[in-house]
Length: 401
Image (cartoon, rainbow, N blue to C red; front, side, top):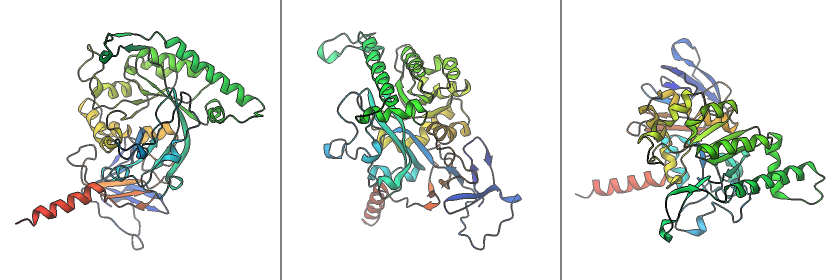
């Protein structure tokens, strides 16, 4: 009761009343206009605080690696070039200390994506408070991920090669290999299937429309070629992952109904002649041009940095988006792209009570202090390895005298 509710679709209710039961939101609105008996309810007075839908990680690898330097805890990728049948979900570690450190920042859901190879595998959507991977699954096998060939490449300077950017001599060959694989998969799935071929079977959802195709591509040529390729293969659900130069071809993306998982905003420009603040303002460019955008965070320390997802969104506010538009980048938009918006991503009656209360602006690292969090109406512990260490050592030094 009393919180400023950020619905996730651009709407804000200043003095809100939200009720939920059996894991779903039953009422939400202006507290001054609603009359509800709270005698049989647990009541949280959130006056002066803010309530948000749970933040959603796009293109993440949480739960697949615990300690980078310990190989036994690394289940990020499989050997081979074409691995559509590799399912990240069965490798997801619900006991990860890294995963539990997301909740105190309001990051409650995420897409778990395998890495490596040309076709990296099949992702799933999970929530971040579960006993096992079966319990964690929100949407199983939602899409297949492809690393599109680089149209340009640099020489390996550490081997004495020219580091200048040059056209990839093998580009056409690599694209042809991908085309051949897709065609063989279509032929297999249209045939009698007398012998099982698990990789080709995993591809069937792309052609029937039940699975999403996520294509990692950054430059204009790669993005354009990738989208045209997917369309030629009859794939209807397409998202570009990374999309560094997507702002240059927004009309093309819009015409083809292509969404974008945009690269981490806290990064440096790729090219010498790019604006220094291009990564910060690219989200606004895409949003203004009508592209459905979500933020992704792959790259250096991507699992640990997932907790900073709201602050990546906050950076886009400093470069032109409104706070509610920025919020959509990590709530409603990823839910729409991943196909879970019927239950998650916004605070609406009938949807999952997956939400949290912050003492201040959740997109600001100084004020995002989470006091309560819920997944499917279940109250979460906000304890983590970090909070335990903080309590331990704060008491130690407090009592040192």
